[in-house]
Length: 136
Image 1 (spheres, rainbow, N blue to C red):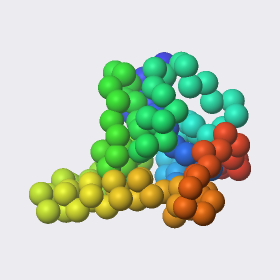
Image 2: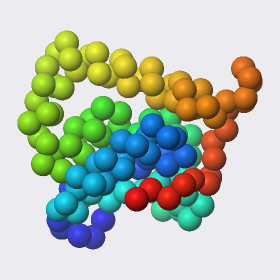
Image 3: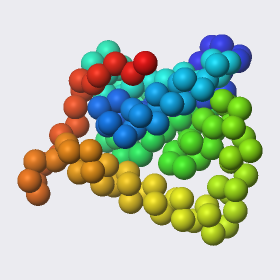
């Protein structure tokens, strides 16, 4: 990330309708352009440039900070909401009971995301698409 103004680069599954909805909202609220949005399901996504496997990036949401540090899961949302000016929402998510609940809820969602978004066929295979609708 070359721009000193950028606070976080988020790596999201643009083929996931629920993920896309959240990212679209964050994109609209990112009026100061503090976030880089990288759709890992886009055909032009260059996986090799990041040192992560497709499976790692699909397992849960990832973000990279300007210093190169990677964060995952609920911490990504904390970084995103802070970057777009909603840091007041972050504090309650760090409270012990709330933090544990959010971490658990996100892990359950992430593990079942493909099923929940209709990308599994029967009980056997789930589809990881490399094509997506454009995120605006």
